[in-house]
Length: 115
Image (cartoon, rainbow, N blue to C red; front, side):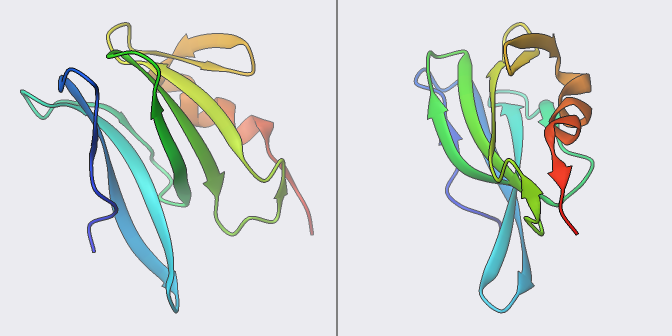
């Protein structure tokens, strides 16, 4: 399984695609990546394949809101949200704008793991 159907931006320039992996019987992690449709250049790819996208909402042709969780899920908050500006190659998390290269570390910093 390669993940769920790709989510192209309203103008088709960018695509949110996923890499799917089954971690338990019928439990899938859908790790998102954002690519430039015309060239296949990846703007965003998570290093840790435990990140899974629950929801993709295009706000504009260049900005997408991702609702994410991290497997195995024993953390607070259970979901995190970020908004990615594909043209500017930045993300906004909890009111802070940062380069896409810093997004995964910022999301990890938001999680408080439970024993």
